[in-house]
Amino acid sequence: MSSAFLNILLVCPDEKDATSFYRGWGPFGELAQNSNTPIFLHRIPLLNGSPQIGWSTVADKQLVFLQRPCQQAHIEVLKICRQAGATVRSWVDWDDLLWKIPHGNPAKAFYGNEDEVKAAMLACVQMADIITVSTEFFRTTFPEELQSKIQVLRNRLPKRWQCCHAHQKPGERIKIAWRGSRTHDLDWIDFLPEVVRLSEQEPIDWYIIGSAPPHVLEALSNTTQVFYYPEIPMERYFEWFIKEGPQADILFVPLRDHIFNRAKSHIALLEATMAGMLCVGPAWPEWKTPEPQANRLLYHTPDQIFSCLQTACEQSRKGAFTLIQQLQAYFLQQYQEEQQKFQDLVFA
Image 1 (spheres, rainbow, N blue to C red):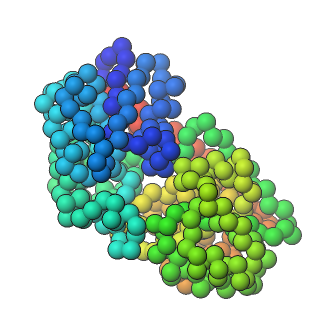
Image 2 (cartoon, rainbow, N blue to C red; image 1 turned 90 degrees about the vertical axis):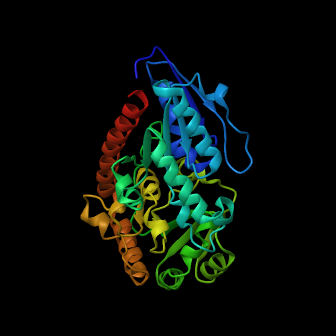
């Protein structure tokens, strides 16, 4: 795109929304601050009753970015972009497979009928100039004839956040953290028994950040010390860990094995690593790294949780400084690659 400046319309929430923080307003805002080309950002939320967007809003923009488009209103915006011709490029982006939100997840009611959501998402893919998703697995959930149009753009942490060193000293109680919202209630079901068993046998403290189910808090409190921080919003999890909260040793990420979770990104692994923690998460391709020691902490089934967490505790006691340094270097390289891909899409 050859222009003395860029007018970009972001149809997404502001940085207080976790998804926008990592994939919308956050990265575009960072680019606008650091780019040699003047970039002017205009944000309009469009979801569940938000204002409609007309021709006058779109016509003077060079790029229109729609995050999580899944409604007829989003399709109408894309129609306007197409009417404007080559002067206005459209970009749709998803980080969650919205037509496969599991029953029992509070977000399902928010997004509505899954058949309508799927139809809207497929229509957006057919109409947009740029289509990005957060994982390769996500890309393969679309019909085969559409997959070649879709690019994988992985989540990345803001560049302004520096890496933290692993800090564990031998002999200290291990600090294990979990962060999330009530949309993860179902993810605890299969994992809680093994987590409780570990808490009964290992000298650990739990740090629960966000909003956990009451029965989880009760079960953990019956076996060990639990520190609960329900007031921390999702977009501040990482920042809280490195600036205000305890320097935890391990981040635990319980995810049930189904298509919705499989399509999710490894943002929790990124947060853990850059905050100086080991991460116990699922052994899915997106979560694996070139470091065998780190991959030993990834579980295939819930009955492996005890051994994975126990191994993580052992690594922490011995000192995980070198391993975390290696992982941080790997993810910093990945950041450079993904950021370059992001910039190429913006300025193409």
